[in-house]
Image 1 (cartoon, one colour):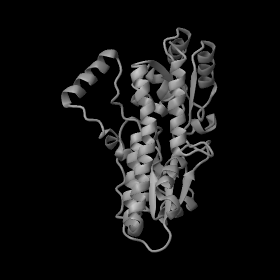
Image 2 (spheres, one colour; image 1 turned 60 degrees about the horizontal axis):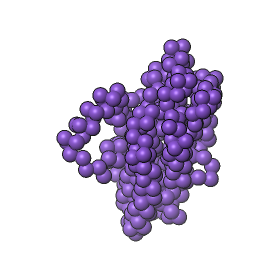
Image 3 (spheres, one colour; image 1 turned 90 degrees about the vertical axis):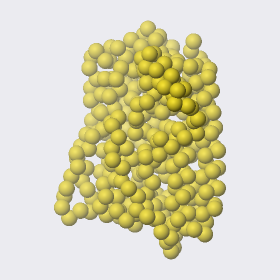
Image 4 (cartoon, helix red, strand yellow; image 1 turned 90 degrees about the horizontal axis):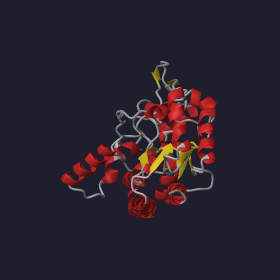
Length: 338
């Protein structure tokens, strides 16, 4: 997204369709956990099933589960659109209110969906991916003692992997659990095809293991390798790869919120590359400005590889293809630096 979009990350979003023009103050990404919108019951429906997704990322996940048994509409597919500050149109509100199922990111990332679900769409079943974040780690079987030891080691090293971040689509297990939740809801809406939805979700989960296999290999081959990023979009990709994000918090937070980082944080970030203290730069191509472009140029001048990431799905790619590429690009970048 352009710098113009970034500069408007914090803005008022009108609640579409309300007779009173109530507005909610929108904030940019936050590490705090916002309250989620509870899903309405999913009861069997007559006629075609329509799924509305907040972005084409979750639209792709929904398509993988629904197959040809439902129609999927993604409200945001334009790379220049910012879900944080997106203003829902009357057509968007109508699409959500008339949908059989709504799938969204949650966590404050696509607040416009939660606003509509709280008003015109309050009777529409929904799946909130952010609420499945903890489920994304259910496959791990660490004991309390092991977890405590690991956390202590991370804190001693100066970083922690416990930060909550709303960009949960960069966690393949969360996406897989979201697919399973979509299948469950579709099975309630369309019981005759419930088994097919479940099978499709299971296939998606198996494909997601291909992504986690790559991040596990990165963690094994490059444990705690230092990296930097222009903003914490790929937080979970870095976390699942067991890498050490050395980016100054002030720099990341400022870029994410559309503000100018302090000169000190810019200098500290540039020093990560000029001193070759990091092995890769994870770069969000959808929020470029003079500051991030300078950081990229500094990284490239120092011979440190750049891994490009985005917030929306590139044209012609599925979620699995997109996230597999992000993981393998990161793996390749780390393989080229000592």
